[in-house]
Picture 1 (cartoon, rainbow, N blue to C red):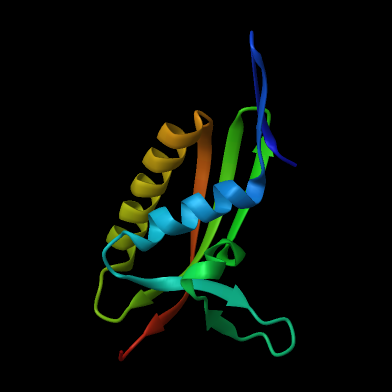
Picture 2 (picture 1 turned 60 degrees about the vertical axis):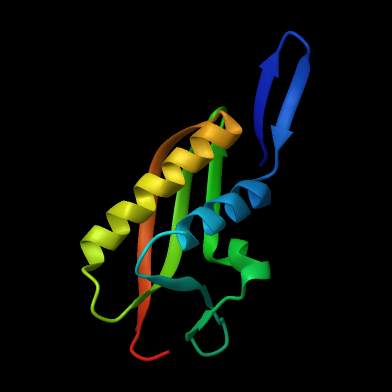
Length: 118
């Protein structure tokens, strides 16, 4: 369901996949993240997504002008997971709120894997 804003000039509606792409790009700017993950339904494995399909690793739930965002990520080996997750949350919240005008209520970071080598 698209997020909507009403003002005196009309309505603005932003589709969830646009917000998901914005959140995915914002998350990729954080240190320690290798990429977004997508679950392969056939065998339960997670795959690393390419830049053009980052939104598949993001789920956006919108209610009115507030958002809940779930990010599925793969991190680098050797980084402190809690610190990287907090950085991702801060960056995604800042960018989504500033660029869309919607309030982000919650961001959930799901670490789906760790990449050991490049």
